Length: 138
Image 1 (cartoon, helix red, strand yellow):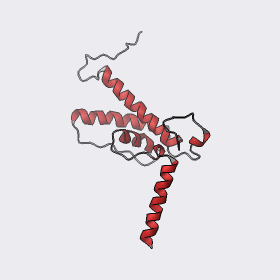
Image 2 (cartoon, one colour):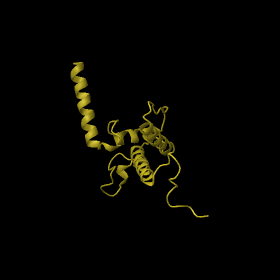
Image 3 (cartoon, rainbow, N blue to C red):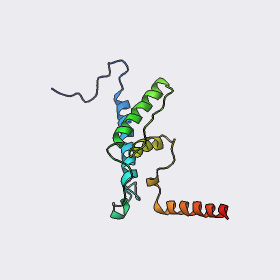
Image 4 (cartoon, rainbow, N blue to C red):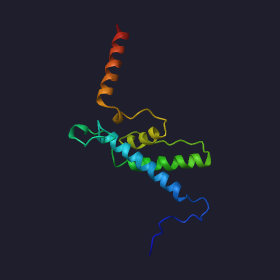
């Protein structure tokens, strides 16, 4: 039995090869971001060779849940857009947050994930926040 390179497109409502490629690329980008949120504290774009100091000492998130949540989000988002649905993706609390945060970051509806921030920027933001809290308390 041979497997065709492209799925049959003669089925009504079937996705084209281009649509499948775009969805797959978006899902893979979500997985990359989710892995970065879980494992990396610096150098998320791998602009330099990965070093031990780039890896988080304590992992927050669960890789096992992230690809499945991102898969569901990407496909539900496609259906919502295609059919102009009034719907929401609801995921419970837990270690799968990177799997939901990655797609909402990519679509522009979420703030920058913490793993994308460098430690220096995070430290400055924390320092600014605590100094403004101290000045309000005084």
